[in-house]
Amino acid sequence: MVEIIQAKTTIAEASRAFDIAPSEIEDWVDEAKKGMENALRAKPMEIREQYERQLKELQEAYGEAMLELRARKKLSSLLGEDEK
Image 1 (cartoon, rainbow, N blue to C red):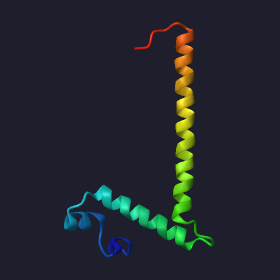
Image 2: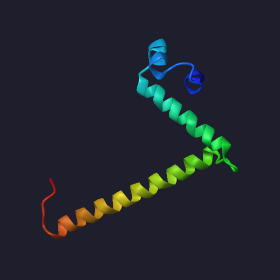
Image 3: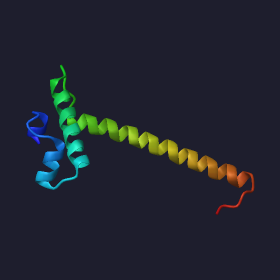
Image 4: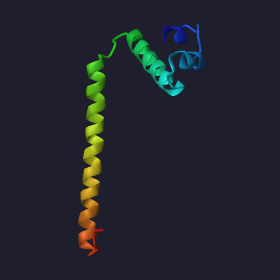
């Protein structure tokens, strides 16, 4: 996949050569670019720190969704609506 980043081949050519969907190759290229950008920062973020930040954000979103679901169920029971 280095050939794609070096513009020695195209995603379409690599897709045909390796029998891989172009979208999968594009995802790999995007991840590689993110990794290179991170490596070029003055203080590169460690992969673990990135995953921990993402995990925290997902946990917060999940918690908010659960609170909203519980609130909707409580409101529904207070209004006497039957659960289906």
